[in-house]
Amino acid sequence: MTANDEKMSYPEHYYPGAEELKPDEMRITALGTGRPFLRRSQANASWLIELGNGDKFVFDFGFGSQMNFTALGIPYGDITAWFATHLHTDHVGDFGQVWVGSWTGGRLKPLEMFGPSGPEPKYGFKHFCEKQMESYAWDTDTRVGALPAVGAEVNVHEFNYAETGPVYEHNGVTISSFPAVHQYGGPVSLRLDWNGLSFVYSGDTTPSQFFIDNAQDADVVVHETFNTVEQLMERSGYDERSARAIGTFVHSAPEEAAVVLREVNPRLAVVFHFLNDFDTAQEIYDKIRLHYKGPLSLATDFMIINVTPDIVITRMAEVTDHAWPNKSKHEDFGKAERKPMMKMADWLLKAQLFPKVPSDRGLVNKGEE
Image 1 (cartoon, one colour):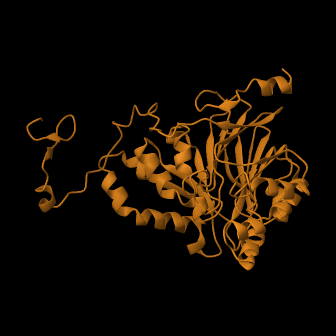
Image 2: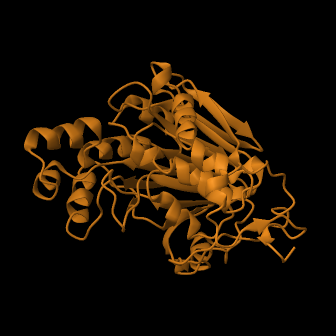
Image 3: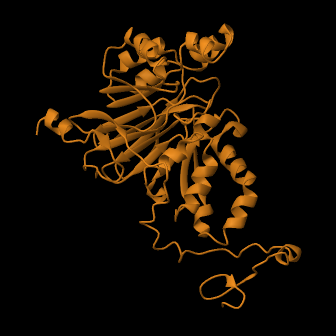
């Protein structure tokens, strides 16, 4: 089969659950491509990477991204591990939903979560996770009596943000971290290598030599770029000083990100982290084309990228707005261990209109046991 024949074998749109990955194939899904300002058309940063060996990884999980994840119909228990690039809320804001939403959605194993340290412990991923979990104490302590107790478990793997090298190696997959230049110490970019294919994700960064050095020979590179300074002033109402600080120092200006893409020269370059509208995309595209002439996609939510040794194609997914949990792996849900329910105060129990009592079928109304 020629490369063109292989491309033509893919449907025009991706329908979740309808295409089995080939053993040598990678599929990348944009779960969130927007800015910290959350809107319905673009969730905060998040990318799903599925591999032909069955592994699935999520890089970043910003606000709103989990609504897009569930629309794909993937069981939460299928995710091998979650990775954070840094601790801005638009990259980790859906922590609670990842943790509790996946638990209520049928996950029957601990979460495996990876993220970078910081210059001080309070700026590290471990501190973030511990405090997030502590803040949800009432939520999770009240659930463990009704839900499988294992779903409350989170294994946190913090790695050194200042080092370059592997932070995950298993099942033929290597995920490496390297420093990102973004406001302060702590942020990282990530590279996934598997079966001769590679995916590099910038997280948030200004153009840096770190990225150029570590993204060489990549198949797909996702690099952040913000809306232009002019767009930030005209559409977001920023003054020029703020627009320049945010658009060119905190983040990557399109024409400057283009230099990085030119030096890396991937099979496909993808830019994200801007509000992608009909009246903003062309200016961003034109500025990138000043310095980078290679294959390019401007990301939006539910963009799908399929990668094999011979082809790279992009499509859009067709998804439902009315997702339910994928119950295909729930056979052990009812058998999994629970902890004792927390005891409600008598004065609250007495206010029940329909008091419940234990039975072989669980809690039932009095007289039905």
